[in-house]
Image 1 (cartoon, one colour):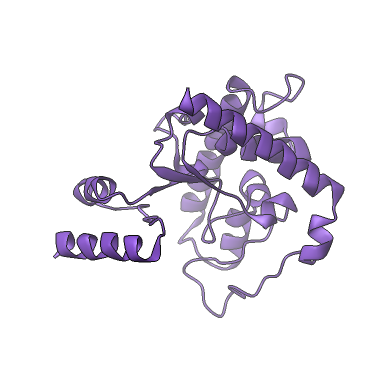
Image 2: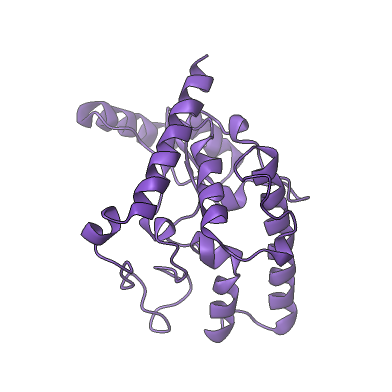
Length: 223
């Protein structure tokens, strides 16, 4: 009864004056994706997943307008965790991978993805020209962290989602799918209080920068 359910969803959206965002990630049938789009449900675009088999990342301007762009989610590593492959190291410690062959493949894939992402950050002006061009030689820095968030702020997506964890450059995830007692899911706190975070000059500078980029992207999309 998918059509009936989508009709009810549209009705409730009107009644409550709210937008609806569908988590259309993973193995979602193409037919469902098109039905969601045609019903006005916003898509969910995660930076980590927006690349092809060659690790060429989707240009910010090519993100669909009917979507919310995010760098990561509650089930994925933070920006620092992703760049440092901390999620893979943690996954190994928790016994999430069947053998070293699988883990080695994940590390290799991550290195390719990092290089593809770094190339895209340079190509679309999200990093200063002086920033490094070889991902394997680059550590996570505030400039790189900002560049990744700039990338989605520049996107054509109508909505943008950002995480305080990434403003604070935190490494540990809040949730690891496939675990229960092995990891304290949903109990990891922010490294500082909200008051301290919004009093941090670096955080405020980052937010202002992203706000400026976002407004510029909106004007570009409207022109």
